Length: 271
Image (cartoon, rainbow, N blue to C red; front, side, top):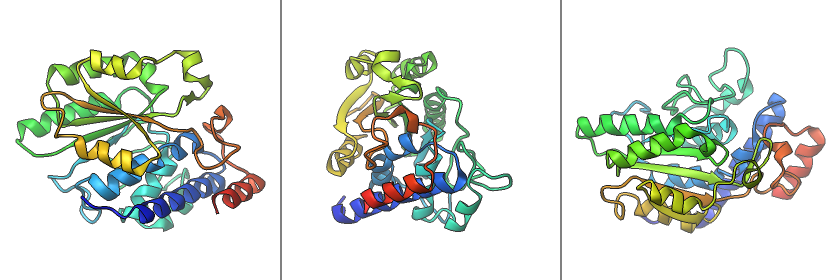
């Protein structure tokens, strides 16, 4: 599938700006892990995913489970720019009565599963994939996870199940930005050797630069071709807070909104 790299980069820039604006305007939210996942979601929705924003419940759609369900700024911006809902909804982000809450819920068009309590998304993707198999549907199931999240035992139970049932229609995406809420992942609970771990659990694993569109799109394109009989995992090396120097690799920006001055500085950098 061909793609316009320049257009994708412009889309990523727009998404980053909207992440900052959403969190600033709400006075809360999770910018750091949203900024690290931009290219992963832009490439998925623009270049790979079989979906229909005008018919979010289309029975033959591919499904995306946002297991790191707190990164709603990037999710909502990607969905709105894909046409799932109007950007007028941004005004009620994280506000009572709005459809765009602080963690993803099925109230939002395009969201497949309520997440936020971490460690559950991969099990959900497995279950949906098994259901798709029973219905003999040619669907793919993607699950975006955080690196702090995969320190949880439930993730590895799901990893064992994925291999046990040979779920080669499941693609796990690890946003490996190396920073979780309270510090560096390798200091809190070291994940390495991460690729070898997934492989030892029976998965077909690839490791990429998660901010390089060519590498991201190739990884998505190989899914379903190279992993017959095995679930597929993309370990995407990313930078928490990508694009804003004072947010990059800084745990303080895991769940903190920029103030007026910080927003202006960040926008100046992005421009």
